[in-house]
Image (tube, rainbow, N blue to C red):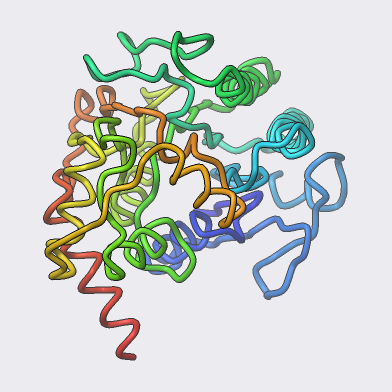
Length: 316
């Protein structure tokens, strides 16, 4: 099969491309700065010669969008919104104009679309979409607005011959350098991986190999469309999440951090505390209902696998 992956040069794109290459698929990545033989230039906002790659392809997986690992300034939030909405719009235009449109368009979205919640998990049917929840910073609502606009752009695209799936993805955990697991592992190994602001907020996650397997599963299941949660079935409080990660590394203690300490750390790292403090309790209702079996459903064993692979990479 031919896969086209707009915005596929980031961590998640690299995870997916490795898996698809290993399975023998033809993979083309659309990038603003192409650097390899399988990469084609696009600007993420307007039609161009790149659209010929979509015409005749089997699957489009749009991962394009500015990284959320940044300070949530008005300018960065606007760039996060525009990069997602504009890229989704132009992908839809390319599919609509194709003489041989792809059978399926998988559009990246985010589990951040759900409300900050501790009491019950969110699935696709009973989950509460976020917005102006009490007791949280007002700007968190803009992240939800971005997610809703992202999905709305795909939904409104006139692509009657192409099935559309919105991937409400949790954090994808892989041993790749610079990824979220790598960053969290550094904190744990230096004894800084304790609870943040009490650690009661839930962490939703998915193992990188389950992420790639879920993509292939959704491509094969032509009866699934609309939003799908890409998250392991075992979200857990941040304090337990980091305890399991420390155990995998053999580190017995992790220093706790207060909310204001998290603010300072996020400022130093040029990131935002929403990534640490928002409670994302998300479960994969539709995947489980469709019969998808996770290889890594529980975080402690997933963390052990990832630590082993990261150690192997370091040793290599």
